[in-house]
Length: 340
Image (cartoon, rainbow, N blue to C red; front, side, top):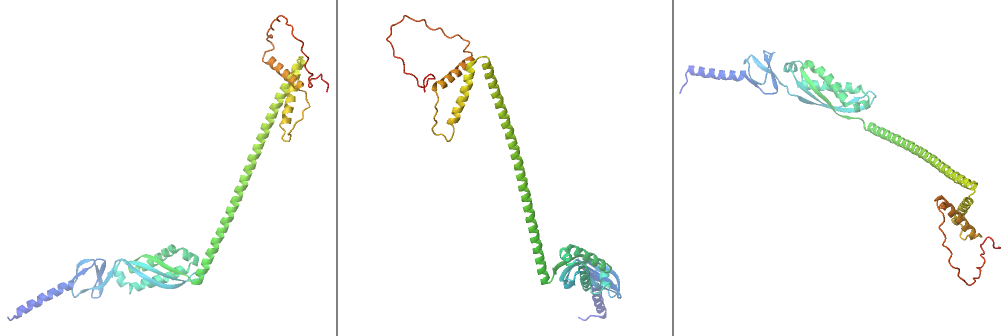
């Protein structure tokens, strides 16, 4: 089948329309922005989705990734403020906010951000002492973030984080720092031990002081109680002596016997209770003791009122019986009338 000239023209036109449609339809994936150039000049930015451009007049200039990206900063040598050399590396996170500025305001965007971060790491860390550098990483990260983010704003870039990954001082410096830390901890231990010993001595002294105070108060109380007991005993003795003196003045001879018998009995008790006496020789008369006891009994009867009652009547004597004569008893050797 032969095609005529008109058929060929139609086929060419259909193919041309299909090519134009393919050239004018652009699909932008999520997370990207495309810049459109018309005869080499930036005109607009395509958003994610299906977009139409003018074929053969407009073209895609730059495909910019607007997702947050990570940029590793290589290890570099840094001289601190106190002339200590350390090695530091970092990581930077950035995001493209304006695709046109990121595409046309700077060339080789990642390399520019990398060099900018490295130079600011040297300037920020070089203005700090080594001890401050090792203990204030958060402050270093904040300063780096503020400086780098301010520097990349004309490029349409937002630096979200700058983190120092590692700081490595020289080996000899690490050993010196370890010795310093050990000495500091030993000093703290000695200070704490000395404070503990001082506190223990203070507490022991306070305890001894309180013990001495309590002991002195106890001795004072005991002395007061002993004096009070002796005073009461003396009052009782004086009262007893007064009563005996009044009885003697009234003509009661038994009071003297009671007084003498009491002292006599107390003396015998003290002699018998002596720890070093085994045998006690008492050249005493039993009748004297009996007489004293008789006096005590008489006084007791007077105290309990038995002396006021008349003695019971004696029975009348019965008829006298004749009894055989009885021999007199032998003389009592303990009698007061017997000769010694």
